[in-house]
Image 1: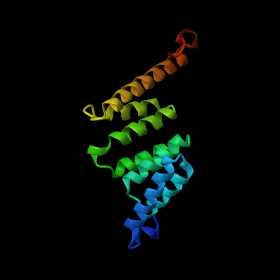
Image 2: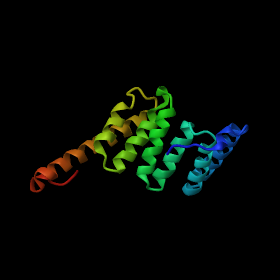
Image 3: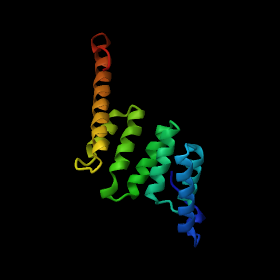
Image 4: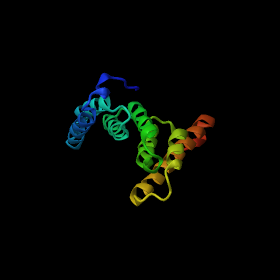
Length: 154
């Protein structure tokens, strides 16, 4: 997912990036996720290091049930997001990893999520996601060891 285009050298690149991003947001809010993804991709052609556009593109792929693509976008967003603003990216990255049954990696993202997040509801959700990932991981290990004794996943 590396980007290199001549568009980033356009003298109006910042304005064009913002315009495409805005179109992406409008489409996303209307539930037109493919159109939104296209707009966010265009936005990234003008500013390949735009952490918000990478994040928004990852959200589109998440809505389109493409967790592998979402993961790549969230990882790209993390590269360009300042540490004090990585909470949402880590949360969404953890969820996309969880959707791919990459439980260990998902747990790592949830653990990295700062404990003193201002979004209390989101922090509660983080712990629920983490707990679920751990339960699934444990159940899968039990199934591999002895399927008859593993019991149902709760």
